[in-house]
Image (cartoon, rainbow, N blue to C red; front, side, top):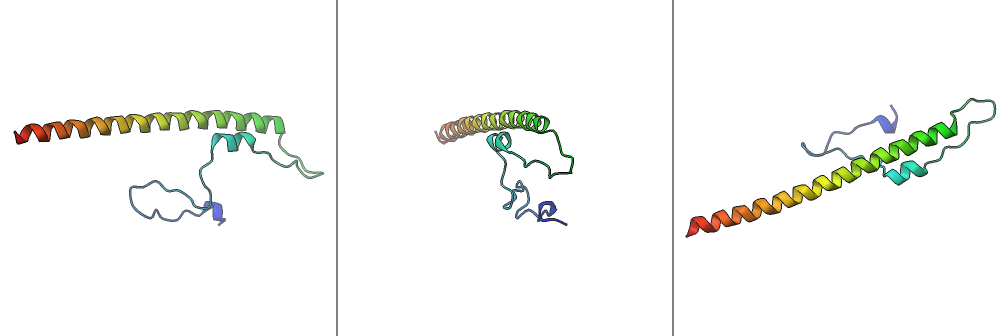
Length: 95
């Protein structure tokens, strides 16, 4: 089994597994990835098709990253509103 396929158990339950050996890819990393040409006498992939696919993947990754950032901002906004409401309720109950 190669190192890439090994999946250690998560350190704590309920958290997302993150590989230390393979950090998360960013869209620009996918977009700029280049592959060496196939060795002489070997057939390889069409580089134009590979790079077109990588560009599509990068666009999708960028959309996912944007949606995640928006979701995190909305979550923070809701948490702040909830804390404010809880504080108001606690102060109202003390009177």
